[in-house]
Length: 179
Ligand code: PRP
Figure 1: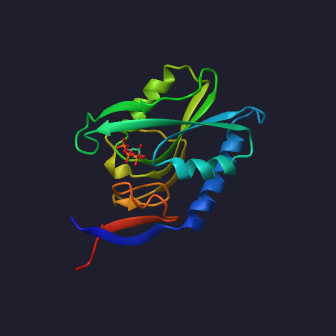
Figure 2: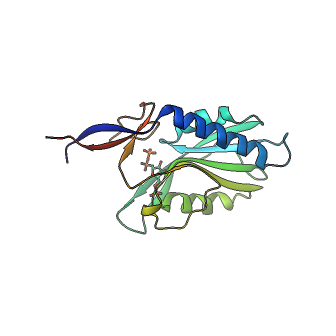
């Protein structure tokens, strides 16, 4: 398929407004305002969202990153997931928020929740900028969702096609070039 036509689905202004709202909710949702929230971004796609979300939160935050690779994602319901970069920090006793760019089948987050839960965080929630509910194979309950989107191929704001387009400021649909 010849991909190449970009059209803006969610603008940088819409993203900024929504993230500010999510940041304010995170500030309000944890009763003790002095308590730190530990943000864990899943590489690579979530790096841009992490940078903006962390700055939209006023309470103390710490950040860490995790690398995940999945095989058969989107093709089989049993996509095999493995950790390619583990956390640098211990999360036991911490309020954790997993920061994801997109929830698709839900296979990655199901695996991660299971794995991180075993490390005994005080609480664990999900913040996902984008959600494609039509694609879901595993139920996921994300506390914070930026936008629910249709099943289109989206790039930009951290999301890629063959590693390209991550640096686009808007979230765009990438479709076939018109002949
Ligand atoms: C994407 C996204 C999530 C995962 C979601 O990562 O960042 O981690 O897929 O899909 P799922 O709900 O079907 O499991 P991707 O594998 O594209 O890697 P990248 O973030 O490094 O581009």
